[in-house]
Length: 193
Image: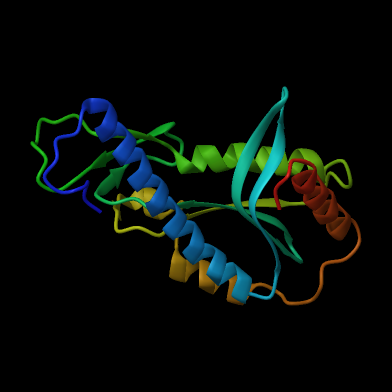
């Protein structure tokens, strides 16, 4: 998307436009992942708002339940080139055509972001059964070219589909279902599901 044609934007207007464009791109990525998850036949929650401790909340793009545990999915739709390491707090983003000496944009690591989401999910699940496993998945839906270290810690949309097809299909039982219900109730209590 390009800003409205032939008008000069103030710095504030340009920032608002970039934020608006990023939100639309993010929604496109989340919609694509939601479609894949909804077709999986697994129990799924989208746009889940959960308590994060200290009176704070955290917004989780997607959750799904498998016989192995609860899966937490963070979706990102980036362009350009992303470099970094899974343990880095910030990843670096560059776009083609930028001056070689231009500083890279720093992006908060989706791996770190989703680790915080997983902690919030586990905080609820462990109240039912501390042995419940919580799995983290970062799905990249954009056109970004990732460095090898980042490829190793993320999934493409097709890799997510492969993961889903490889999961066992028997219905989760016992404490895992109880934990899933607790998470659903926590989402409803905050006005999300």
